[in-house]
Image: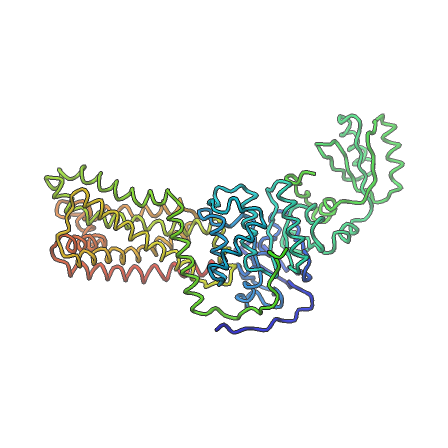
Length: 329
Length: 269
């Protein structure tokens, strides 16, 4: 018989990570990462490509061993108690890791059997999940015939066969169409309503804003900010001015005025022709409007608003914010 | 959301029982065999390879080497048996590298299952493929006119022996699969090793018809011993020395490559 260990007391904290360090050869992927996820919430791990998001997830899912630091899931240490941790977590990686040669049904039955469920129960559980993820019709087709969105759903279903209490989602919506993305979001919300803790990595700020209770921003293997989406937005002082000229040809002129006269750092969206700029002091706005008027630039739209998470990200990382393509508005 | 609700009550177990490890291995063997049923290309390769070898080599070399096709078939079929099975061991490494590439391995490793089950399950499933390959080669050979001249018991021993050897070779293939990172890589490196090994033997041509320097290589090649043993067990002739040498080679290959493959696999795990 397996020795049972009592559930540990973990004070409403599902995931706790302290000083995590991981090196791959000479590259330091994680350089002392700390993070905490409260039970039943979504923690967003936000950062540009190569920031170390996947390494955090893989460490927590017991796939790689850290060089230093500790990580616990529901009170179990991912290194010392890897086996108990594996019984509590589900993982959906960046790429749908399903067996492409097996049918969707058999993929799920296989996982169920591996988790020690009887054949009959495994089939019932698979059918239930296929139904939930709208894959019943495709259940008996090999997974290689599935569309990208279907594969992702199957992959997510596979990580839920064992009813995990903590779920890791590594960039779950990258490359998904808006409908599939919305479906996934609603599934994640449903899971947290049931008490599941979700750690989600994403490059999409809108996703983090919509879905996450807390956000940890990492860059180059280090945590650079933590907080709720609102707290993070408040961290960037001041407001954002968005100017759209009637004639898109005048954009360079607006940029000139902002950079040279006011030493500001504007960014222009090539699609809408809108110039946005963080203004430290809103008293600056009337002067700017006057200068634009004097330069004879007709304004189609002008707005002063709180910074978006994109702009927060930009301010925090000093990098370009990740491209929001694939998340059509 | 009942379909997704987490299990709350059960505390996780500390360790994996040996019984669970066996069950995990059998589940993954089932998975490996399932692919055979659902993947027509796989079946095609498994069936067509020996059929193609037999047709091609029998009619291409038959007259030239043995004077007539029937004599050559009696000589060559045990060798084709070896050829077909040995080449099908490449599939083991290809499947493993594919599992690594697609992330299926990561999925397995994130589950509370036996660490060695994915490797053991893959190998066990493949032994069935090798058996199929043996059966097809023998059946098609007999259709072309091959006659088993030794006792049925000896013939059964022939089938078993080639499977034992394949079971050792597949660990080399598994190692290639674990280190090369792609199915194409396995195919590539595998071919570099397998071609000289298989064709540089007495599989297709009697050793005494070869130039001296090649004879030296052929005489030391384990596949030469295996083929000799197969010939003895299927059509008659001396058996014991070749069988013993084959078994020793099998053991040696197993002792070298199985621990190496497991080592590499563990390091990934």
